[in-house]
Length: 519
Image (cartoon, rainbow, N blue to C red; front, top):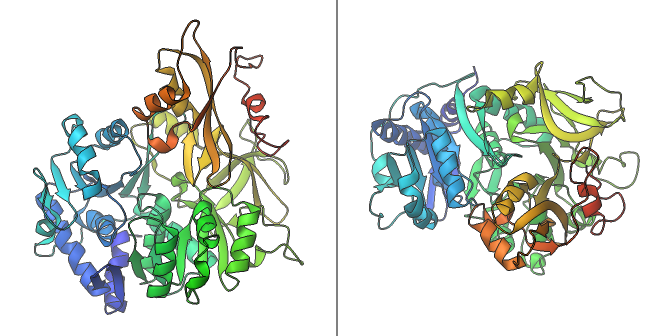
């Protein structure tokens, strides 16, 4: 049976003296790490965590985030990362829905938690994960881990391991339930295609609340790698980290790659240690990958496509296909080929498989497919049909099994690697008394790929400006989801015969012909 905590036990047994984590002045070997999380697990059990009990964390990247991911299942519980970019009401929904009884918080989010604390229906204990003065009403992290180690609860197989909430097209987030098998098997599936090696030094700058970095954490643990942490991505600190720690591999989203390779100071850093960059979460603009391959010619670039429901990786585009010339060219716009153990197909609207080069919905099945959505049986049954996970993404397969994505989830905007669902933003806009009609679309943005843009028709006699609507949205949803720009028009929004707003027409002024022709 596959188990996240078994990976830790093995790492301590086989590579106990290898450095597991480094965060600033803190460092520990795999043997020390295993001991730490066993003590941490004892502390969590004393707080009432047992089988399927949920522990949530709202914090920036750190070695202690890494500890939380493994100590929670060691105690018998389920770990729940919280998106640090959420607004207060969204955090409340996530925590109430998961019924998390323990919330781990760093100093950056203590003020937010203070505002929403009374709305949290199930959280009984708050752990302050930073060093220094402990806020009132919190337990110090050092006190929670100051315990004797306990035996691993040995959660495994189909036991629930992690709960990852994703944005919902109806405005309601879905809690994706991932088992130990889902998470561990997907890491095993990906390791050979990602080129990861035993004892690799990995830098964590992508947010650890994302399933993508949890995936990297599990890969690194499987291979007894060394993990280095920075609170968040910054191009200069990332370059400095690569140099100082002789980093070999790392995960970035395309916007991070863009900011790093185009930084004027990149030539001042020694980056010879860097062997591989994994990227995904949003399309990679061709000029960016060309520049990256030029600036870092010795680095293997590998693109991964997936989604939270697949734990998360489905396909990988290998480095030899990252070329614009020769017999291996022609696949740069693809998302690569399916991982071992994953069946991949394209289905039409009747759930029938289509031929190669025919566009339809991307579907997959394999041991990495989620258990389902928490408390959402109907949505689960729509997502998993006859054993196939329907991704909601449109694409086609060529005759070599390369996947080409032609659109993302209907009307989804991908800005800086973050998924923004237009319906969620529209729901926020519609809550303003002056809004009669609205549609939210993605428009081109040089830095972030896409920018959230709203087209609004006001009620008769109503007056409101762009800034007011944006501020209104920020009170309801995360800032990154809010419109960055608003267009007002007097005439009604264009509708199809079925009464659906024709977003294709709204996009036309912003996108070259056919470049963002979705729906």
